[in-house]
Image 1 (spheres, rainbow, N blue to C red):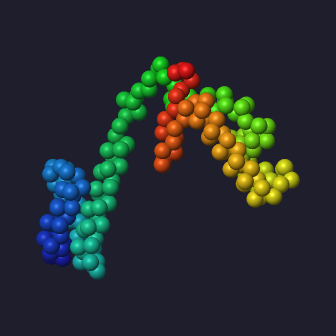
Image 2 (cartoon, one colour; image 1 turned 90 degrees about the horizontal axis):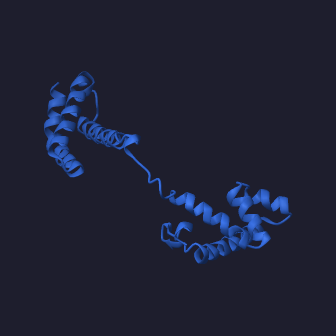
Image 3 (cartoon, rainbow, N blue to C red; image 1 turned 180 degrees about the vertical axis):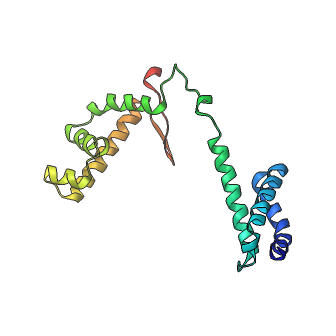
Length: 174
């Protein structure tokens, strides 16, 4: 028990300060501190056998904090979330737009995009199926994707940012 109390007295101010920074909530930080201390107390027999009790307290505090975060994330009830009935989800709208613009590509462009991107055929499988080299298949797929991007940009007003597609004009807005 002496080992635990010594390590706790050394670590407590640092742990508390770290928790305040992480939670921005004094009560939550105090709750976590109390729960970690109780857990340490329940393991007090083994505590003195640890090489670095202070490190164990830091690890336990961090793990307990992460567990609390996970509980908060999972606490949102799915029934509390609602979707608008009037507007289809963005991906559904984008899929409708994709179906509209695919026929505007050449037959070879449409085929490689449908096979590799939509139907899950690997580039190697496509190359073998079409009797092409792998590098030719990759180049053909890249060109087809670039053409598809151009058509999506003009037909559906798709815009891109660093992360990918950011917005587009849905079919309902046309």
